[in-house]
Image 1 (spheres, rainbow, N blue to C red):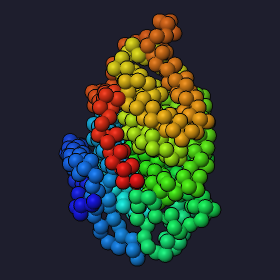
Image 2: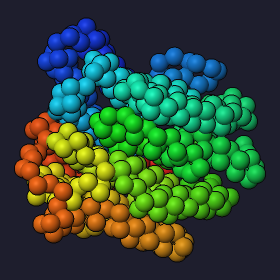
Image 3: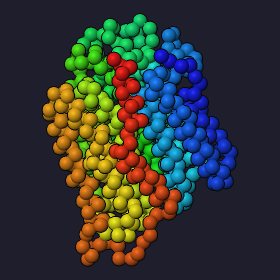
Image 4: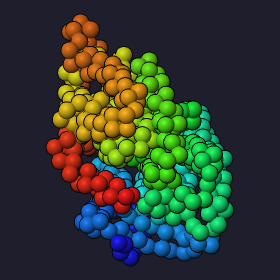
Amino acid sequence: MSTNSTMPLIICLTSLLATIPILVFGRNKNLREFFTFLAAIITVGLVFSMVPTILDGKTIEYSLIELVPNVSLKFRVDGLGMIFAIVASVLWLITSIYVVGYMRGLKEHAQTRFFACFALAISATMAVAFAANLLTLYIFYELLSLSTYPLVTHHQDKEARGGGRKYLSYLMGTSIAFALPAMIYIYMKTNETGLEFAGSGFLVDFVSRGEAKFLLLLLVFGFAKSGLMPFHSWLPGAMVAPTPVSALLHAVAVVKVGVFCILRVFTGVFGIKFLQSMDLGTMIAWIAAFTVIVSSLIALSQDNLKRRLAFSTIGQLAYIIMGVSLLSPKAVTGSMLHIAMHASGKITLFFCAGAIFVATGKKYISEMKGIGKQMPITMLCFFIGSMSIIGLPFTGGFISKFYLVSGAAQAEQFPFLCVYLISSVLNVAYFFPIVFNAFFCKEEDSLFENKINEAPVFCVLPLAITAFLSVGLFFCPDVIYDLTQVFLAMKG
């Protein structure tokens, strides 16, 4: 049952229209930041206003204009889109607080442009979350790449320009070379009957196994924001951006859009039952498993904290793809849950990295011995974020990883179950030494002889909130979990 409402459009327009006063009042930083917060608060409120309707088993739809025959620019809100919208809107609000502390603390240039592009990126992200068909999804996927490019190249030096070129060439190159031809072929193959996501997929009666396999590969690699190897190197390269951008990229707007698009492809284009009947999930699961292990091993060798977090992100995104590829109800549930659980944990870690840089100027792990005694709040939150990524009890990551591991067992895919467990051990290996050396290194080994203070309150408060959120999602995962079950019920 669906309800026709302009609410999805209004939510997308809220952050888009916020760019106007941000630009107009750019010289007045207080007004500029006021409109950023106002748009973020309104967006969160509007998103949560739709939750009861979706939990009631309904969808919310709104169609704008027909772009090609039988395909409109159309929005639909369902359980999966609702999960992503909640994550994106809540973390945008928290990140906006952090941005103020970070940008003011370091006296960054071009802050007005930064805030405006930030708002544009969230507008595109929300439109992806609510996309009702493959064409709408593709359009806003590309707009997100364009709106985040100025954020990646914010410093405008040689390194930033190089990272930005790689960022744009990888993301738009793969989508144009792979996803666009696949979408055109699908449109022609379905006799122009539309590209709208369906409960059991819409390709069931139109393609052979060979065609389905080829199209699945094109779409999975075409949405390269997911960081799946070999199209992953843009992600560490994007670490030249300011830390709030890294947090936005890794927890919300970019990488989560990549895995979200792949979840849509699996559930709305092909359909879980069709993929099971064709035995196509295992192929993608092995690619994801390779990405999980290799990225985790690379993370172990990184001394730059943000790069270690970047390779950790690549592995965690592959968790989500591997889960949905297993095609069992528990594994798909775990994939959807991990969107939220990973987001809260990883954004905490990036906030901590930024707070450390603002307070000390340090960005290498080898320079952080003894920092826990100087910045206890920041490093305690880093520990909580690490626990969530590892999947330890009393953090949200435990819930999603439990479902992912259970889903592998349910699918009787024990090699992938082992991949999840081995990866968790590797997570411990590249996170816990940081925490141990921060708090428990010998006095003579500490690199912080002089007293230093925590970062400004606008930096510390957001990371404390997201760390609390990571714990809160362990004890109260009900809304996110219920949305997954409502979505899966619609898939039959």
